[in-house]
Structure formats: C-alpha cells, structure tokens
Image (cartoon, rainbow, N blue to C red; front, side):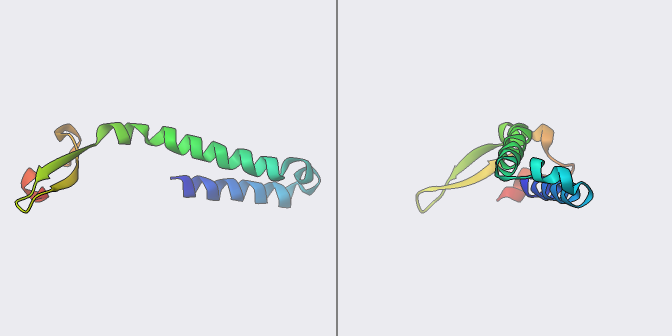
Length: 88
C-alpha cells in the first residue's frame, strides 16, 4: 500500500514541477519530501491496523518437538469453501 501512495506522491510532485514551475521551487524540497514520506508511512500503518487486529498467530505442536506457526483468520472472515483441513 505504501509503494502505491509513494508513486502517487511522486506523480503529484512531478505534476507541480511541470505545470507550475514557478511555484514548484517553493513547494518541492527536502522538507516536502520528508513530510510526504512520513505522511504516507503513517496513513499506510493506520489503514492496515484492522488487518493486523483481525488475524492472530496460532501454533500447533509438532511430533519432532517445537511448533508449527500459522496465521489464523477468524471464521467470519474466511472465504466461502475454505476449510480448516486446508491448513494441514
């Protein structure tokens, strides 16, 4: 998600540089790039918080010792036709 928004931010800054070259020198600079990167990072993390909260890590003990870890999605979020047997 962040790579898409970084591409959009770069396209916007190129648009400003080409279509408004007199204003571009005041707008585009190191501080603009820093704020854009920080903004894209924060928005990407906040947009993915529901995904992080929806999933959980589950563990199955193995015969040889240790555990097998996998992402367990609650049944309400599973696609139709998905069975628990597919995890094994």
